[in-house]
Length: 150
Image (cartoon, rainbow, N blue to C red; front, side, top):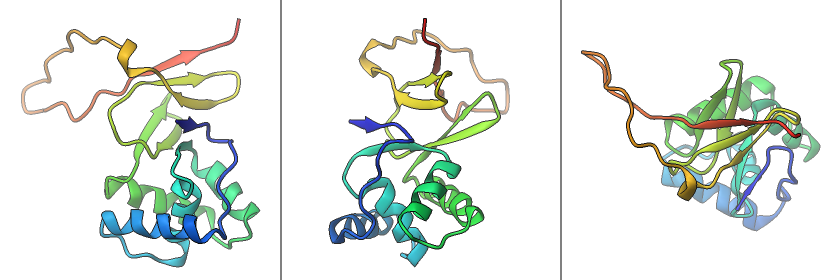
């Protein structure tokens, strides 16, 4: 199950959340700094997947009493992506969302709330994509379905 970016984050002080966060970092060989463990505990401490923006994660970490700068949140999210712990999804080239579910799957972008949620993979069929130009290869295909309420 995936929670939206503004959903309740797990308690940061929970031993279980901190242990999960530390173990998550260890799977990617990342050094468990205080800031990384705190952010990891918020992201996956309850075992649920999340879609967050740097700003929403910054607010959550501040709400939990941790002193982490917005720049550190951005840098940490980029490090998590580079380590393969998260995927970055860009909407409109202006806003980045970070997803803890690293399996290939489509997303819904809810225009009215600015949230990103998982879309059902089993309902998506892509039968053909264009060939990459000479000298290039396709790194990934991101599917973001924009929704607005009627």
